[in-house]
Image (cartoon, rainbow, N blue to C red; front, side, top):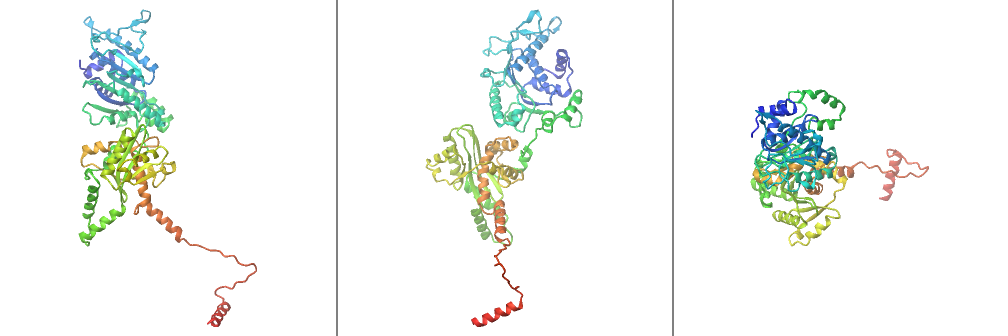
Amino acid sequence: MQWSLTELEAFVQEIWGIRLLPWQLDDLLKFVSGGLYSYSIPTDTGKSFLLEVTACARLVANPNRRIIMVKINDGAAREVTAELARRMFQISQLKLNGAPMYPGTEPMLRWSRGRTGIDPWGIGNGFSVEGRDYLDRNVNESVKSYALGSRDLQGKRGDTLVDDVERQEEADSDAYRRQLRVRIDAVLRTLEAKVDSLWMIVGTPFHADSIYSYVTRALEGVSRPFEQIHRPYKNPDGSYLWPERAEKAEIHRKTMSTTSLAAAYELTPLRSRSMTSAEIEEKVRDRALPYISNQKQFWQLLVERGRSHCPPWRDTASWQMEIEQRLADGLGFYVGWDPATTGDWAITTYACWGEDTYLLRCHLGLGDTWEQLMVVRDYFTSFPEARVVVENNGQQKAFRDLMQQDDVLQFAPTISHGTTQSRKDDSHVGLPAMVERIQEGYFWTPWMDEDRAYREFKDFEDELMVYGPTSHPHVLPAIWFGWRWHRLHVQMTGVQRKVAQRELIRKTGTVQISTPRPAGAMIARPQSEALRSRTREAWKRRA
């Protein structure tokens, strides 16, 4: 059975007694048709209601489906199971010419004290409907609800509907966000292989790196249809998304904080220093820059770019010699390594030339120490003049010791980089300052080969899109280690010039030296004629 808009509208009005708004009807038709969705609408505009309708409509269309509901805790999971059971019983009682309008939809339950369809008895967290195929190898119940993080989800497959699992705690804590992401990754395993299967997550984003944007961002490039749907409380023309909720929205608008209002109604959690995809396209991606295979290729590329700007009064040979000398003095290659014994680690290769930085390699991954060492070795082999910059703390010192055991990396120049809070927040060379330089267009990634660049730099761009005070990046610190060192220690950089200028002012400032004068001593003024006469007479006697 395939739902149409007219059938859906009549179905909802018959069972729930509600006439859907046009935007609700459009969204509902997408959901019942299948796909992967991240859905965010303002508070109290029917997120959970649309989820409930979607589950019922999918079961009506095919009673042999498996519906998996994921809620924030066990109590909410039991409540949604009981409500779905009541609605499915109500649907099963509809008649058409004396026969069931939707056969096979009646829940196989016992009801309390003969109150059929009111209070399901012993329902637990799931139930089956009559149309379920019991010969199917999949023994899941027709409807099963779980709390987020439940171990019972292991191995389950079916249409998955995740409802409102992100809280304000995730906006305030990086640890909570990592925990939520791990749990959502486990829920993603419930996705069926069928093309028309459904997986959707519904809720309000509370921060820039929300789980709702993370899911759809990770799905880019898949063939299955997916969409991230955001509907703020006002339409582009200024009208309310749901006119009946206008008064409540205005009360909240006047009483809620700016941050809470932006999250709950405008669906735009406050960003800090992060970039949009359009800004990344304009400021970061260099579509005239090819993928760089090795250090020699990048050197020749910069030389050719410099030769193309040869002044008309200079001969080409001397101009090229000057370019090569400038590159030898100011070009630096770095392999930034943000290591980890457990969890995510990042390794990057980049070149700093003047005010510009070119990101040439980027690897964010999970793996043991040996795998990280092999990535560093591969990057260093391609860029043999690169300095390997490693975070300097007790744990990371073990990685430096490991490098000394490798027959190649033992010859790599290594720099230890401290990550104290004062260094991170430095106004000139701190991590936020580096992100500001990226926003200003001083960082470039080779994007001529789009497919290759997407695989290489996607993690870097993802961190730029969610960077803020509560984010915990790995690629950005790996770049920052060498970028900071270059700006502090290599000539002809902006920070180095400022430091030199301040030092010059300090050394050449006016100095006044005070000499003690003996008590009662009378010293004649330098312009005194008597003093000058006595001085001339003294020099005559000396001659």
